[in-house]
Length: 195
Image (cartoon, rainbow, N blue to C red; front, side):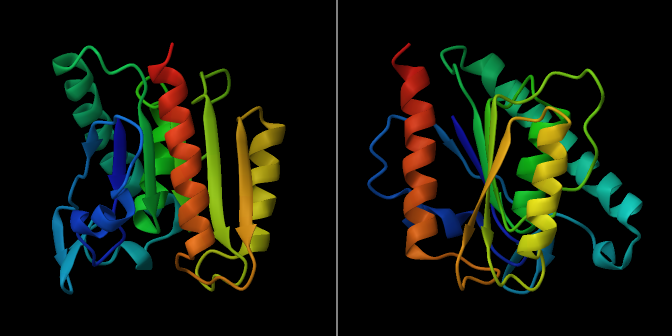
């Protein structure tokens, strides 16, 4: 199962073109943020960005807990689901990462993109099997050096995490990023389906 989380001001429909020609049998879940924003929706109430880091992290943890409950319910309803991958961009990426960090029993693979990687691993807690962070080199919101340093610290703490940085890419997607994202997730989901 693939759970894909949209960015702020977007809708679940954002993912549809990216999922066309998906060559791996996959149940896809596209949740929608609960708060209207611009032409779409967002995951957090207004004022989220003005909060201190600890309060922002708490917001992300609370929303991730809601999404983890959704995943738990779907797994119970569909016992043939053997592996769950989560992905998201920007706020959706923050949530994909937090799901991997706080709810590894529900998430096997996570691909956060343009994410701040908020929160600290709980010592001794189990880890999601694989986290692959995709990051624009010139992202003005989540900078590549910050992400690289954070990934290095997480690896040192035992988190199975890697990062790929895309040259000249800002807080956005590129054809190469999308191709890598699709190939990686299809491989991860196909590998489990063949077991």
